[in-house]
Amino acid sequence: MAGGWSRDGAVQEQIDDTISDAVQRARANLSNREGSLYCEECGEEIPEARRKALPGARTCVACQQERDRTSRASSAFNRRGSKDSQLR
Image 1 (cartoon, rainbow, N blue to C red):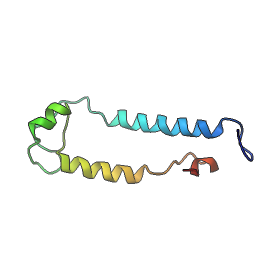
Image 2: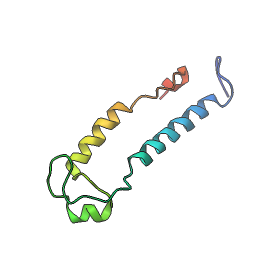
Image 3: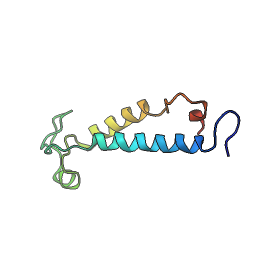
Image 4: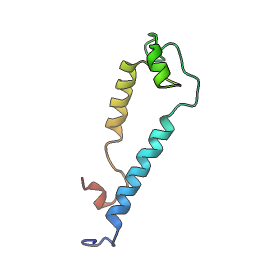
């Protein structure tokens, strides 16, 4: 049931689009490259357990956590422009 000026299903479409965008971002972040022995950020050795668990890993855990923290902060808003997109 839509409310106000929106049509039926508009809110669900916004939710579906937001999820689709998140999946696309996650897939884009997957690496098809060969992994690295040393972190691209700090130069420390990447533990073998991490390289086995995450083939293609190019950063150590600490640097990856920092990358995730900064990317999460920049993608926290739904910028689709609809008033309904501001609902949480």
